[in-house]
Length: 459
Image (tube, rainbow, N blue to C red; front, side, top):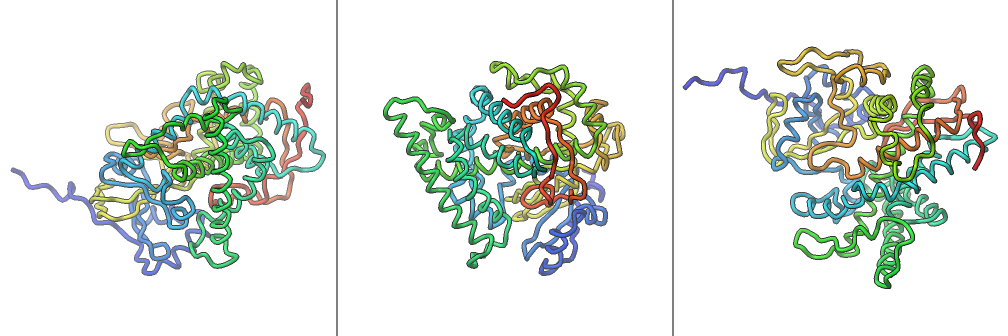
């Protein structure tokens, strides 16, 4: 038998040499190119420390494929602040059979039949937003309007809440969201302490909503709206009905998963189009041949890639350059080799999506990337041929985001509805840089002047 060559042996895990990780943490939050610079120095897999937490960063299709190839060797992981604010019962904090059981239950809320039920509600909310923008006399912070829109969608289609109830929930949810990636120390007045208090109020409100739905079901009354009936009869890993506390924590996760990242994607989509008028004009050529609003029975497919390939290309390019999350985490439960680098068991691994999406690489026995210019915004690349980057804006593997299909539908409906009904113009002099925690969003709120498009009237 021939001994293995040195080339086939895993390489040691390179590291930045950070001891406490304090300086690395400061750089992580201040430097948008934090991961890119270290990848250039150490390769596609490296380890550093952030506030004492060893963290392995990876990019590139080889490393990510290796990470997701065997779910038995990895498990879900979140920072302590996220774990505490989501709760111990949350699907996000479960692994193994616990995770799979709750995923089956919650996944019913995003099946094709459920999306068809939700579509008229989403279309109505798009119309409401378009009318609001069309009547605005002063510049509008579009990012804030899109956040409210995204929250209204998930609160209406899942919980069946009306405007007043949504507003009450939204205020606490914004407080809760801002504490998710904060330092997990409950000092009075700190973002984390405020988020914990908001979490308590949110759970109380969600419990009231759930029990109201249960009472309606027990009385044989149909739910007025929402998808809570789809959770009825959900079983845990032992085959027992989920307790109310368990269901409520899943609802809290769903509100976050269906809101924060979608709001970010919508803001970044509109920002990209407003900053690139030629691309907006190119997209509008396609939209001119599409009708709005879509027929109710066709709403889930009217603007899919088969009917609106340019829209799909624009959305993909926005997701590539500004993914709604900077990355996703896994923890190794056994040693793994990632892109030829040995990673020990017990290491937290972050897939650095923002850096990965700008790193085209040719895989063995393939041609070089068809488009190596990955720093520019060019949606056409997704129509010219295979993109040199495997895009994972909703994560990957068995823990891929449950709300992916709803988010994609919501983005398509919002983009078509707004662009066909409203003309938007950027206000000059504002800061359009993105704040990235918890998700990318323009720092000054994306100020726009808006008016109804020619021929459009306020409903």
